[in-house]
Image 1 (cartoon, one colour):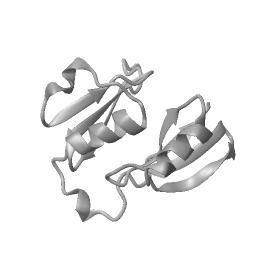
Image 2: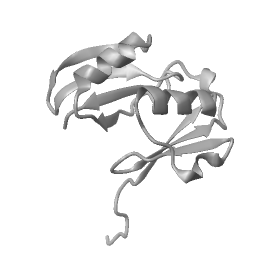
Image 3: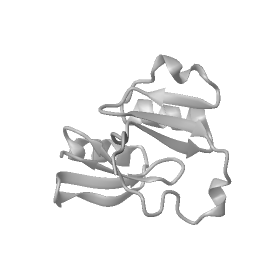
Amino acid sequence: MPTNAIGPNFLTLQVRDVERSLRFYTELMGFEPTESSKNPNAAVLDTKPIKLALRKSVIDLDAVSQLGHGVVIWIHAEDPDKLAAHLAEHDVTITKPPCDGFCGREFQFKDPDGYELTIYTG
């Protein structure tokens, strides 16, 4: 069956507080906001190869025990160990310490809303 689907090119996390999440992802992760980050209910980060958006949740995020359960978001980094240490210094929960994995050096952490993300070298 022919299809015109190409693949994922945009990712959105629904968050409780857009400003808090924007500070986390810019100040601690080092991402840059795009011009479209002027919406009070959403912010778009200039991440590569696809954009990451933070959007005021339209669902009750507290109604589930674990956000994003079953979905793994991988974020490429040049130095996962350095980023893990930086996040730990700012009391970010590291759920899997830096280690050698199938995709290179990696670790996992929880963002302010409890999404578990994986950082890796690729």
